[in-house]
Image (cartoon, rainbow, N blue to C red; front, side):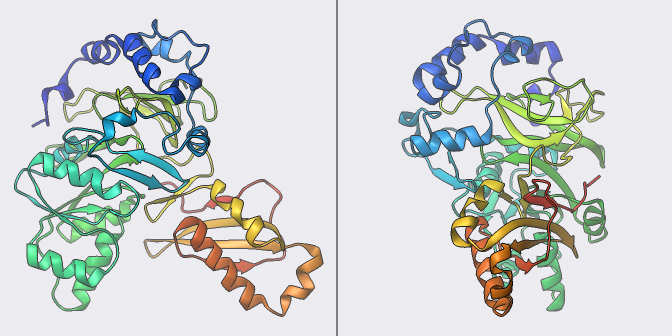
Length: 420
């Protein structure tokens, strides 16, 4: 059973709906969003009526959006702010500011929950963060639109969360892939395992095959969706019968392109490239917005019956921006490093995976003039570096002073590998 009939419409009908009056709608958006108008300056907008003509417009990269927002806070002129009365605004790492849009299920998460077997009346334990970023609200709004009862758990305080699940008998978990296991292990250590959770929809990190298999052994069917704070749920897993179908179906209403990383050029269908999304919402239009994530199109139609474009899932980053523990870490965040620690010559953040947990290690080298003087206070230096690391990323990690680092321009080195 589908969430609605749009999931099974023909490809021709979908394209016609996506591009109906597209040029006129885009022109209207630009007239009310001066940041978008400036970004599209010099381009003829009325004639945009297909993917081919859309490809003539420039790609909007997150760094461009961040710069515009710094010049003209809070949204850089990309949002029709008069439409946001009564809504929320958020700050994600970068920092990037995002609005909550009007209406039910504004981030389009209900279809992903429905595809994961979640239905009206289910009790949902939402362990995504409700602090600063829209993460918790994305699936909170979606679950309530579906008719579920939501417990807004947020992150941290595992004991309280375990107690809450026992009390509510929640059957559904939504959150990052690894935190569910942390709660299950905690409950097991107390001799009172959590027996109510049957399904989970996870995002914000890699769901490795070993993790999914371990959950299945504990009687929990875990599926995943691909979402961003800017766009909401972009794609989601589906099932054929009881079996999870490889890949993710693109959400309705979105135009997804796969481009050669760093360019505005589409790849050959089936090749790996950067996911670029257009969502022509009148209040927050994002046009050819580059996510920085890599994937490829699965050209075959999904056996689940949904007819939209399919992505092979997350296949790495087109840049060095990575997700750690469900939060983005961007090389731009390390601009503070030189100011706080002028003694550094070079630094590199190494992200690894240990016991199903993301681990950050900041490796640094010292300028030659301060190497000898700093050796006597290496512990103090490491403590200061770890404090700065937490300040710029919002996440805890360790620091280590090393003799040398490669001169290859890498600031964030993701060594976790690619999930299958």
